[in-house]
Amino acid sequence: MQERNQLAATRGSESLAKVANDTSRPATLPAVDIYENATGITLLADLPGVSKDRLSIKVQSNELLIEGEAAVQVPAEVRLVHNELREPLFRRSFTLGHDLDKDNITANLKHGVLTLQIPRLREAQPRKISVNVT
Amino acid sequence: MATYPFFDSGISSALDTLQQLDKILRGSTAPSNLRSTARGDFPPVNVGVCADSIEVVAFVPGVDPEALEVTMEKGLLSISGERREEEPSGQTTLYARERARGRFSRVVELPSDADPENIQARYTDGCLCISIGKRESAKPRLISIQ
Image (cartoon, rainbow over all chains, first blue to last red; front, side):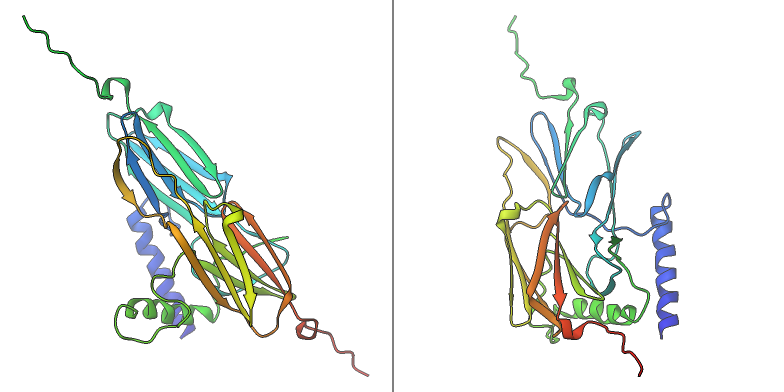
């Protein structure tokens, strides 16, 4: 029974790896809130247990990748009896539109919540175009 | 100090399968645990045991520690609080709203050897870690052979 479970688990992670294809570890999809206003996009992601040094935010071509690993310190060796959060690695990626300014993204991490501000490129910000009557 | 484990390849894997099945079936008329209903899945909770304590971790990011409440009564550990979200001001378009908001509450049934007099809680990086001591009588002891 136990062996069969383990086999199932290995096969499960293999197929996940194929989906993710760049990384072999299965990960948890963090919950996000995304909204946009005139200046840009704000993204909030729940990353409980992730400290600043275990968080990585990468922008490659037009993809934004957020990866962070939760770590919780306990006084002694702990044996798990119940676990709802199974994969401490949080990973989620987004494609960035061409109207966004990839070089000026700001990130803030507080109490396990990541806030990303992705500004729009200046020329992509809404402008009122005045019509000249000739 | 040690790091909290997130997976256990032992006996729990068989239980996990049952729990997952329970989650799937919850939408139907199948019986579920009274104290963990389908809506009550925020925050996720992990429970671990070590030689002299029970370590409960609730993953509650973005909460003011003042707004968290931990109580222990009759072997039940309750974690409740409220997550207040600042609504974006001005004209905005909302694309995703997956993060839990508002009041939440979780109840964890503790083993009978938990000591209600000896509880410590701390909040770091959005994780609420609660350490409940075990009663002296329940701790493992080495018995000397005469």
